[in-house]
Length: 170
Image (cartoon, rainbow, N blue to C red; front, side):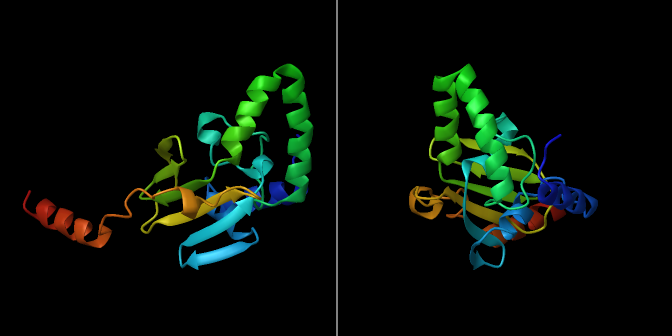
C-alpha cells in the first residue's frame, strides 16, 4: 500500500499492544519536550498530523511512527500534489486545517481535539489518566500560546470525589 516500513512496524507493534489510536505513542517518538508526566509538546508536519483524521482531514492514509517521520512527509508531499491537481482551493483549506495548533487529549475512552476554531470529541483508548499532546506545525503558533484547554479550570480530582460520593447514594 506504499506505507513507510517504519510506520507499518510502529502501527503493527502498537496495535498488538492494544493502542488502536496511537496518537500519544506517535508523539512520544517525536522530538519534543515532555511538559509533564502525561503531556507532550511536539512540532510536527501536516503530512504526519493524524489528529484530525476523525473528520477525514489528513494527507496520508497511514499512521506515522512519529510526527516528524521523514518518509511519511515524503509520502504526503506526493499525495498533496495529486490533491492540488484535483482541487487547489480545497487543498489550500486542508493545509490550513492541518497547520492549526491543536491539543489532543484522551481520558476514559474519549479523545478531545481542540483547535482555535472547533473542538472534536470522539471515541479512543480507555485511559485512567489524561494523556495530552500539544501539537503545532513547525514555524506556526504553539498550542499552549493559542488555546485554553477544556477542563483547565476544573479540579478533576475534586469533581471525581463528588461524583463517587453521589453514586454511593444511588
